[in-house]
Image 1: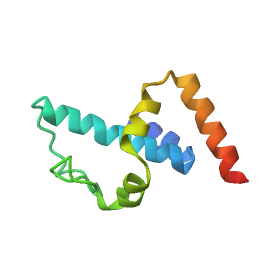
Image 2: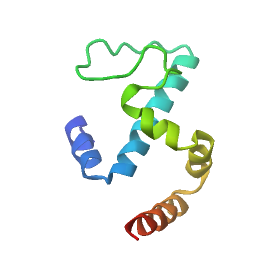
Image 3: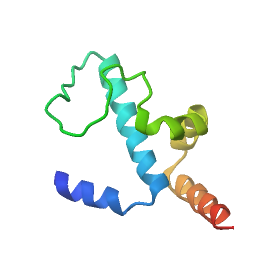
Image 4: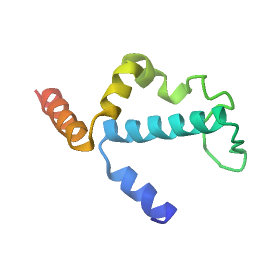
Length: 96
């Protein structure tokens, strides 16, 4: 997929799913850094990613501190169909 297509698809996701995408990207950046990969984000406008990937980002502060990261990692370890089922259940609960 082209970058602009990926962005458009992400923008169509519900807010909770967009947070999951952002969390996953941060996790991938963190893993890459731990594996010695240097990622230069200085040329990316509007990116609020800290150079210390262990430092929480201001824009994710509420999300990261209201969601237990270990719980999220457990959910991410589940097969995708079960993740989708859990998300549907949570969405239904939030509608009530």
